[in-house]
Image (cartoon, rainbow, N blue to C red; front, side, top):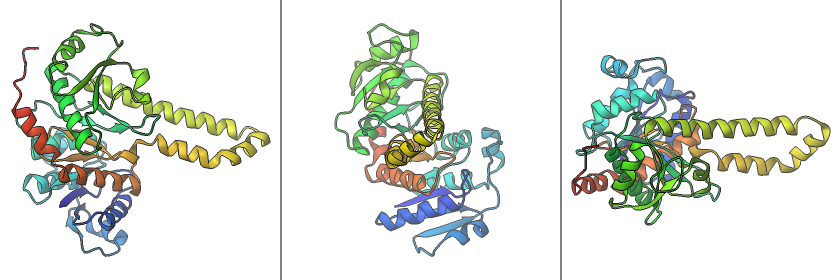
Length: 333
């Protein structure tokens, strides 16, 4: 198995990328990694693994670049060359912590979609109070969505959750403003009816306040609502820990208390860190493409590589492809 990685993408590249790659090849048998980026900046962080090679390029796509234009004009960038490794069958999957829009564009224009999937979905696994986690899709690949797109998201998310996360017959919920059937706008009402007929374990509508308690293993929504939900969760977690820090440093008494619960707070922070589950998969593409968080450290990179390796080992893309081919979609919505 070979995975191509954009070594120049992310806030801590290339050091975090290289260290995560080295940890991965030391833990995963038969894994080979191709790092794509500036060789002079990558090599100082390498310790000499013979299962990591480098494709050199000085060009990269930055966070400020317009995604589609950058993918089309910067054909020798680390992100585009990484995607080409997958397209030309020299790699089985690819990972980048760089420009999200550019990765989605490269996924569509270079790697390509699974036939029958209209729109890929960006799909992170987020933490739950029971430690199990849940998959949320879409979180921003498509802000305008039709009902049959949501059904496709549900099928792809269910296959991934069962085959990669080893959750048998995963429950699938539709994010809505209420749990009762008939709630929501025209999109969610149409999607609800179609989801009842889909080959998934659909449990109905779920509310945003319940998703972190594990109300469903897979939660589906359009990219606009999903992105808002994701950033609300991120912002709430960051604010909560900021408030806790302020409280525990406000007096001598609270500083003593902080010392007593320091390890417990670190454990809680780790439990809420969704990078522990890997990156966000771009489901619906013809090969696994993973978007790691922009501020990924080496541990997060390792988890994203492990995630991609599981997707390859469990033939997630092929299973999605064959499932989609067997279904006649109701696209008049």
